[in-house]
View 1: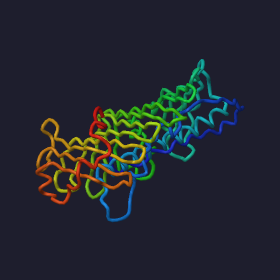
View 2: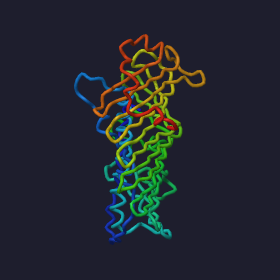
View 3: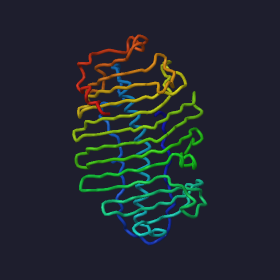
View 4: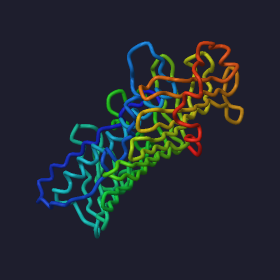
Length: 336
């Protein structure tokens, strides 16, 4: 997933001038849905070799964090503000705010619904044209929930990218440089004491088309990304998406399915495997399916790297090291 910019900044005009209510609505925190990687999986200077798969994991995690955490942080600020504002109306345990015209002057209006629960809250965020007067004139952009039990938190949200594209001013500067669509569901479980965590991102026919660059790129995913973190800082990350992989001249403009599974321990030792596959006869890989394997030490640098033939024959300097150097066993990737 390359060049994935933050999708929008939620900025509702909430100057209602009404009485304060002092609610305390639990809401998803950025740390609930942030993918934390070991420091060893990070950019390094110097001549030692870094793993392409690990760099890909780091970059993808960074891109996912960028739009997920930005979304959560903006929404959390809105919910916190609404806790002190008299709602426009109430429907049982649900407080309804809006529609409010966007205070940045964009052709947007916002409406928020917050339902208080015994262990948390449900919430919905709607968006529409600036002149929208009611919920039925708007589209559901995001819906989610948060549940708390002592140190344990769980919940998530669903987001409709088709709605973002319908109201492209949410994408901000350069909105006409991309076309997005589909639907994503983010769910999480987190223990705030141990920081044990699981995050799942379920992409449903999600597409990102980038226009006006050196060449137009389209990335598509109808799969799940899964991330786990154990109390000692070890974890796993599994991602799959379709895209154009022509950087090395081994593929043309057709899309293939790429997947990466990675695991690491609390010291940063890691192992990853990846593949780029033609699916149902679709794809234009030069030598058919491509497979990669890597291991890294706690310093973040490779100890072993392997590429399947005949790609290995075209890149004789690519593979090196000994698989016996791997601290993380291959079994750590089973089931990802």
